[in-house]
Amino acid sequence: MFADIKNVVDVIRTGASGVAGLRSKKAREDALLELLSIYFVLLDVVEDGRALLELGGCDPLQTLERASDEDAATILEQFKVFVHLQAGRLYSISGLLMGQDVLSFVDPTLRDKVSEVVGYKGDRVKTLHGVGSGLVISTMFGITESREEVANLVQSMYTDHKYDPLDVSAAAREIDELEQGLNELRAICERFASDEELLLLTKKARKRTRSDPSDAID
Image (cartoon, rainbow, N blue to C red):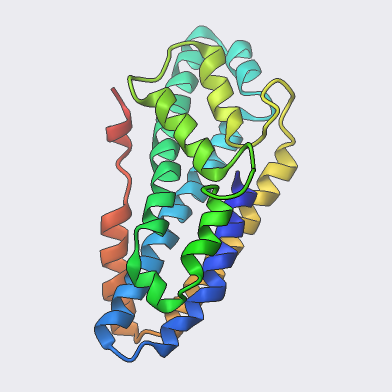
């Protein structure tokens, strides 16, 4: 999943330089606001993806089963909060990307390129959009209390093979590479805004994308 998101970021990054061609200050600021919003949503995915990987280890179900009853209950609740938050973010990524006409002005081909990677086109069985949809459907009516089902949801974010142990090093590497791609995207945004503009746009983008963990608790 994280490698798929990195592919999306790479596509956006290649088109982001088109901001330089926007002569209208408003158009430029609107484009930068959308790019920074995407940056922050995915930064949250990175940060919680790393925390969840550390919490669950190579086998989230085994982590639960090896813990004391009290610790297992706490870990299970943490799993559920992370799953709920990540589900909302992943599912919103496609809408955030595909619904922004302003980005089409930056690069008219960007929407089709992102659509291919996100998973609306092509014959890929497992897509970024599919992962997000699956998590949302699983959490729509309240996350199950089953340890096995929750552990499988956690594992689905990192690998297609839910019954095999996670390669933690490989998963961590994908997350690190995604973070690097996001840093490069932000650096591009910084090239096209003054310090004052960047501060204002960053505050706006962060405000509109910040996740509240309390919303994930039933």
